[in-house]
Length: 288
Image 1 (tube, rainbow, N blue to C red):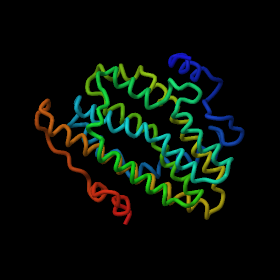
Image 2 (image 1 turned 90 degrees about the horizontal axis):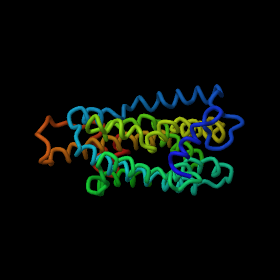
Image 3 (image 1 turned 90 degrees about the vertical axis):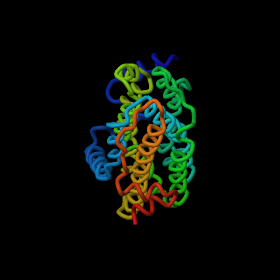
Image 4 (image 1 turned 180 degrees about the horizontal axis):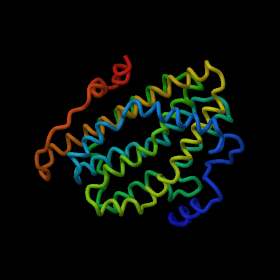
């Protein structure tokens, strides 16, 4: 099946899309609606996009787009690896079944031509950008490594569910921020919007969020379980804070070195990011 055919098939459905059949926690379930709004509001309190938005206002350029493309490609390849590692730390087959679904979706489901990281490469090639590994080889991978260490330290089954929800809860804002970072001119906007990568993500991120909320409701029933869930959820939100601040930093560094750009105003990171940029202990420093 071609990419276009697969996308069309996904879009022509009777009602909202589901990763797997859902007979309880569907889109209209009152608890799904309540907790989706609740956790989204909790995520918004950290204002994780503040630095990247401020940076793009003054540094939007091809160099900034190239830098973001390298960083997001690293992340896109990392997503299914991280989720499968998380699932491997759980011991209940039913929980594993539900938690693995997003990783399967990221890897194209039944169609390998829809692997998300490959679709991303196709999308950026349409605007003349290729991944080089130059910009994100150090600090973005360091951020991802810090998240790996958080995962290893998460011994609770309910904490795993919380970490995976935090991974998805701002997915829609993530995709739009990536889009804005890549749009170094007006022509890029239309080209990127028409790509399978952005069409799929704009249509399907809501299902990843709903599915993750359903996992919270399905597997975290008691107050004690939800307390363990919440601790890991918060850890995951701090990861996003660090990730986007690092992307802003990379763009500032890359554009300040580029001979293709005139010198602009320097964008400094807000105080909460300073501790994060010191290395693997940044998350603890922020929370302490």
